[in-house]
Structure formats: C-alpha cells, structure tokens
Image 1 (spheres, rainbow, N blue to C red):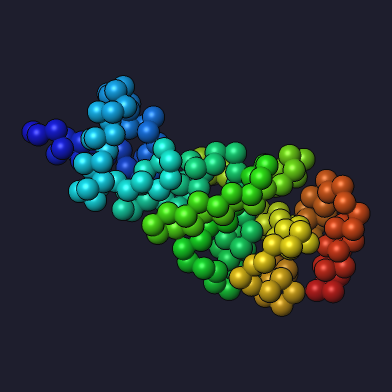
Image 2: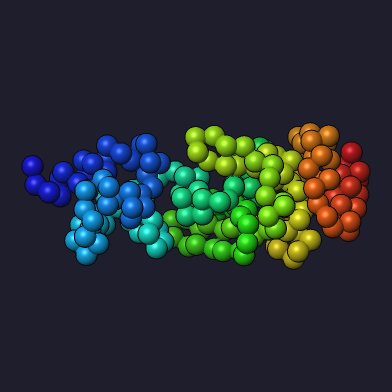
Amino acid sequence: MNILLKEVRLIERWSPKMGGVFSVSDLKSLFNQDNLAILKRRVDRLAAEGVLARFCRGIYTTPKYDADTLASRVSPHSYVSLGTVLARELMIGSIPAHTLSSVKIGRTRTFEGPSLTLVYLGLAEHLFFGFRRERGIQAATPEKALLDTLYFHQRGHAFSFDIFSDIDVSRVDRRLLESYLEKYRNPRFVRFVEGYLDERA
C-alpha cells in the first residue's frame, strides 16, 4: 500500500470520530510524524487530492465536516449561540446557511473558510454561562441565546433578522431567563430585557 493511500484511509477511519476536523497536532499523531516540514508536505498532498482542506491556521477539515465541531476546535472556549441557536430552536426563521455564530470570552473574532464563516462575539467572563455540552460541543440554551442576542444588539451588532419582530419568545422559559438575567450587572440592559419580554407576554 503506498503512503498516500494509507494516509487517506487513516483520515477516512478517524473522520467520523473527529467530526471531520483535524488540528496539526491531530495529524502529527495520526501519521506519527514529528517533523513539521515533512508533515506539511504530506498534508499539502492530501489537500491537493481533496481529502483535506485548510480552514484556518492549524485546522483542517474533510469535505463532510461537522460545523459545530469545527467551531469548538477553532475556539475551544466558546459556545454556539445567537441566531444559530434561535434558528435551531425554531424561534426565528432561517439565517445565512454558511455562517455559524458563537460567543466567547474576550474580543470578537471572525474566521472565513471556503464554505463557512465562523463568527465569535466576545463578552465578559461573568456572562460566559447558560450553555449545555453534548458530544463535546457547547451550545446555548434558548434562553441564553436570546439574552446573548439582545445583549449584542444593545452593543450595536447587526443581525440578519429583526429582534423586535422575528423572534418567537413564547418558546423560552421565562423563569429560567430571569434567573440568568440576575447575573447581568448593567441595569439599563436588565430594564431593556424586562420591557422587551413584557411587551411580548
């Protein structure tokens, strides 16, 4: 078996477990190759064959990768939220199909790959909560996704949907949302959310 075929089969074997997302460190282990120059040549060869594609520095994907897995590997200390979760929870209609929105601690970052744009909006550490972890992926509850959306709207972020007319707030647990709201230190934002919910009660 030639080396290329062996590497292709290794990628195919491990891709389901990895969600189709491999870091350079993963590939070093997979190919048992510590020499970065040799590893780069091997990865470039796989990319030329369409087996792998470079998404961003240090991260490669297979043609059928999982977008949530990619988002968590690009920024491990983040959780999927905002319009991405609202759409999945049927609280809004469709959002741009090739954009996935997450929240992270620190500054806002955007990564544009060949088939997907990852947007990470940055918030303070005390607001990094309200998410569930499944299969290694962190995603906001519907209540936190709504709060994140309203929070970043107040900070001037523009969304592809109208927060006043496009969100179905009947699908959120008001009691849980209010318990989350107690963690916010900005009285102006708290009043805005309370008024927003009361108008839609």
